[in-house]
Image 1 (spheres, rainbow, N blue to C red):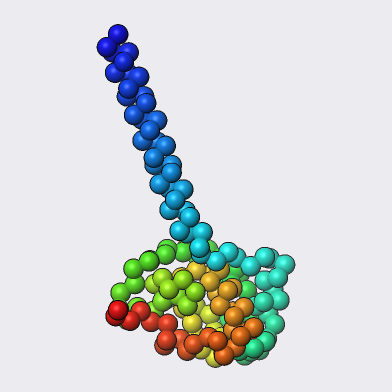
Image 2 (cartoon, rainbow, N blue to C red):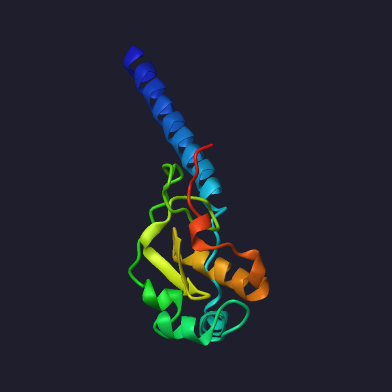
Length: 143
């Protein structure tokens, strides 16, 4: 009987550990869900290939007449929530920007953590052109 009790206790402990791990992973996903979602495909071409606000025809040409989804088709985002002093930061999430994830807006190159942040920032540049800062303002400063 003792072997059965020990086996049952081990099984319950294993189930509890799996449950805790699952809950932990789910709670971590909650943090990541604050990341912007990608623009709907049907709206993406209009967003990226139509000049408006700070986003000009010259910017569209400089970005290769393509959308962020096209340019970053194979891009794998890695979000660094702890940028160091003087690191470029994403204007949307304030995480460390990836030097391989940039977009030209208003003749300036901006750096982002992931393509969905480009979507969100570009929408802001078009709807509130003077609400966006210069790229040099998106740098992690000492607190």
